[in-house]
Length: 286
Ligand code: AMP
Ligand code: MN
Ligand code: MN
Ligand code: MN
Image (cartoon, protein in one colour):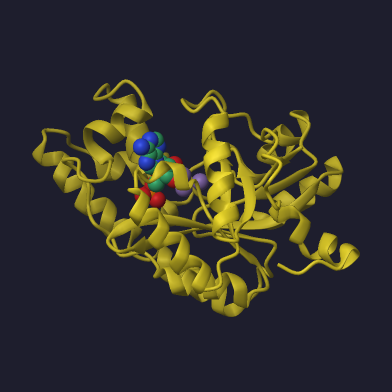
């Protein structure tokens, strides 16, 4: 039982890193990666709790990237979290979140919604990591939208009235930082970007050329068809297959269960076969 993508209060999740690990364990998970946005600050607590529960914790992070003007997320797995170049990149990516919050709040103000800046900050356990998830929560709590999905379709999603274009990390820098720290770079939730077939091909080819090694073939509540389609794409582009719930909070709109991803299609090369410990035992190379 494996889950290689989830969030804690270190970024935009609702549970502490230890609570995330305990819930994953309760759900039957044996291998878990905590992948907070642009931050590895939860890994130590998660690792300690995983040792208590007897499950394997894989170091993880989800790096925000701007690729050809679009937002793309790259998951790093099984890296050295003390790597200075990786930490420098993450610190750079985190900078600017408060400015972006102010810009989004100003746009919401124009739509007659005041107090979003303070409101979102009050909901973020880690102010440096204030995200659109916290803005969505603010909008829900103040009765402007019914749920998180509606917050994005009405206000916060790309191209919507309160969206702001933001320069995150370059794809090349994110891949280089993860690989430089000895990790595996994985394209997060490729089924969620709404990219055309051409854009996907360009992304996968460029990512592979840059040294990227995998993509999520399962994410959140995606269905069997998605898994089959993305398993074929992973095979075509020579990428390993990963799986993650992208869990943020219990009873989320997504309905995905923390810690227990469905089985990958048979043609996949699972990313976990290439984790350092496993690889050393089996003598595998990507
Ligand atoms: P940010 O990093 O601040 O841009 O926030 C991005 C986060 O918002 C993602 O990690 C998701 O948790 C959430 N998110 C983005 N798009 C959507 C969407 N369409 N529906 C629900 N949640 C979303
Ligand atoms: Mn998130
Ligand atoms: Mn993501
Ligand atoms: Mn995520």
